[in-house]
Amino acid sequence: MDVNSSSQSITRREEVQAAMSGSGAAVSGHGLRTRVPLLERLFAPVDIASLVCFRVAFGLLMLVDLWRYYGKIGATYIQPGFHFTYYGFDWVQPWPGDGMYVHFLVLALAAACVMIGFCYRVAATVFFLGFSYWFLLEQARYLNHFYLLALIAFVMIFVPAARAFSVDAWLRPRLRAAKVPAWALWFVRFQIAVPYVFGGIAKLNGDWLQGEPMRMWLAARAHRPVIGPLFTQEWVVYFFSWGGMLFDLLIVPGLLWRKSRPYAFVAALLFNLINGYVFTIGIFPWVMAAATLMFFEPDWPRRFGHSLSRVFGLKTRARFDPWLAVRSRPPVTLSLRPGLRRGQRVTLALLATYCGFQLLFPLRHWLYPGDVAWTEEGHKFSWRMKLRDKESRVRFLATDPHEERTWEVDARQYLTSWQRTEMSARPEMILQFAHHLAADLRAQGHEDIQIRAIASVSLNGRPPQLMIDPEIDLAREPRSIWPARWILPMAEPALAPERHL
Image (tube, rainbow, N blue to C red; front, side, top):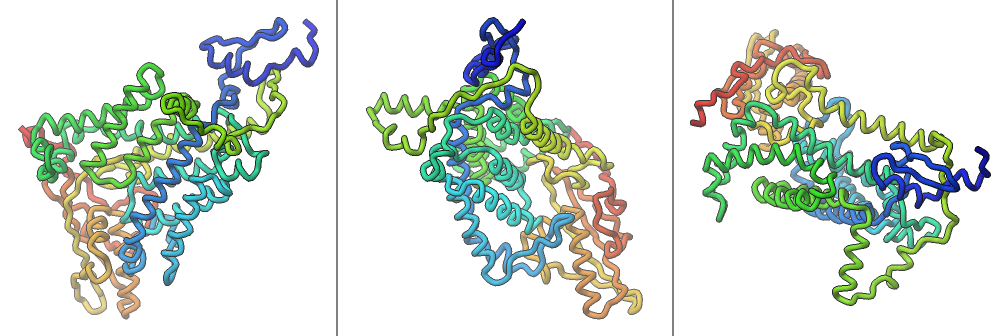
């Protein structure tokens, strides 16, 4: 059938209406009918409002977090004489002098610019690089939510979140837009969903299902006012353990399904508030609460604002028009010919690469022998949150074969108390500190120094056992991504159920 070129295109509005009309959605135009392929729907325009709200919330919460940590800069990054680095990032070291304070001020400025949308792309890039540098400075301060914040900061570089309600949109009218491609919202949603899904899967293990280590953590918080006495009740232990597992596994499907979304949001809000109260984890609950709003319809902030205007008689639209208005443009058309444009294919390839990495990297612990909660190999960056409690004590023995003597090295001369606590239960950090000790003792004239560690560790209430082979000279064991031969296997893989009867 012959049709002219004007009849071979449909407006983006018609495309979105078709895409949202359900399975088998079709678009008609001059007798033509077509289904919009799934991948092409990722480029359909959707309301920018929810993305803008997330940008503002993210920038604001990052400012709060930076303010919280500003007073800890000296004790954490300046006073310690040694810092535990991540494998491959030994070159990341604290700034000299007052450089760390300047770094935090630059980070705060970048976060503020992200929040108000001023020089957005530059600010988002600076914030991601500066925050990642901060994150990589000290392995003993590793937190899963710090890692997530770094990933969100990376995602924010690429989504057009400053094309409305921003200084950039006010100063540069050509940037203004009321719509963004759908992939921008799904990109943020994906990054938020990953920790929940992997966190839930990781909780499907024997210890967690038996209530450990939640039982020990709640018992340690039994002094809390009002609800503290309940923390020693067994039903409360299992409510927290099983409830947390089910929440992580079900919250993403609950937010994606429109009918269950309001209930899932309330559940997420309550979960994060309780999490913040019990475990005192800073702004993380608030970040996740704000992030769950991204799963609502993209125009929810606009509808919410209109509702407030009707209820309170507010007339705010004219005030914000210079920030929100969109330049008049001819309608963008979509060819009915199958396939995506080259730029769209490149975008999809980059998104698929990033998402594929985020789905595969947390599974790398299956490549290592033993229990990851014991060996720690593949534990970090895998969303294995709140799964293990370790009571540990480690001693370092130095041997000089030329002098034929062995002595114990006092780690307190090198590490702060919080560094020693984290290091004593982490094999890779024990190895890294052994290398540091060897280097320091060689500088003192002990050229062939040998370093051994006696690390006694209890995992989730098990009897203590040696975690490091005391016969291995750690000074000669390289840091590596390969399985460590010097980590001893766990003697009691499963908890005895009768311990909690």
